[in-house]
Figure 1 (cartoon, rainbow, N blue to C red):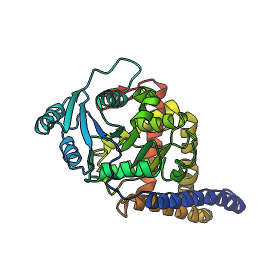
Figure 2 (figure 1 turned 135 degrees about the horizontal axis):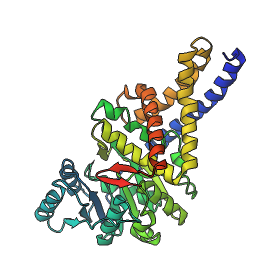
Figure 3 (figure 1 turned 90 degrees about the horizontal axis):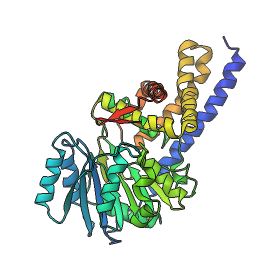
Figure 4 (figure 1 turned 45 degrees about the vertical axis):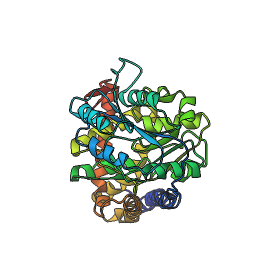
Length: 377
């Protein structure tokens, strides 16, 4: 057993780290709540709303209905069926027939054997056919309020950015999703200072989510378009980094009151969805992800394990767990999740560690991860 002084020294180090997480979560919440402007209704150029869709027959109608209700005065909707195996293509074609001049349906080209992954390949085809000065990328499982596009255009101009992305409100439809999906906030709201993204041109301080990305067309084309992120599984974050590397400005805000999304349906779909992003970190930023895993073990799982193994001397670690739970609760409260979701954090972070080791094994064996019928390597 460690001597008492060892417990106190360890708890002080861990408490300092969790207080940093707490300060960062509070500062990010303040940024997200104070940084966005209300939509002002001004015309700032033609907007092309670009929607890639693969096997989205259950969600595409809700998405397109919400996009057709947009109040922005000048926009088009271009939807690409990315070789779906369900009725997605038929539904898109029906919308194009019923709304000529407002909705255009594209049939996706076959994915090249090398050099591209599915999502960037779909974005390239969409951008090529777009006519707008501004490209509004959004996913087929999102639902937008009528001022979603107006809000994004207003804030892109207000922050003088070339790329804007934002959090959507995440709907959790099951306990399995609640055990996995909130892990997406670990790499952003709890570790990354979101308020520094527009203040610095450092590519490492970049973040974006493909559920909502508005980018100036001239900036998008200046970096080579979707070809700049052709092989990236996490194409949204990679696009934000590429923009910064080219000297453009990006900003990340909160669009939760304008866009909502049920990212994955059920436990295993959530595991597979989060795993593909973890796998991409292993491929492209192994040092960063190793550091994140170290922080996860040191500041979350280790103190909890020590409290269980040695409850008496380990009681000095209770403020550590308390501070972390408070930071995590503030983050998820700001994201609008139910009060009990933060309490699942031991299971959630244990899941995250398991998914990390699973992805490490898949990467080491070169088997890749599977997503929507495609193997990503």
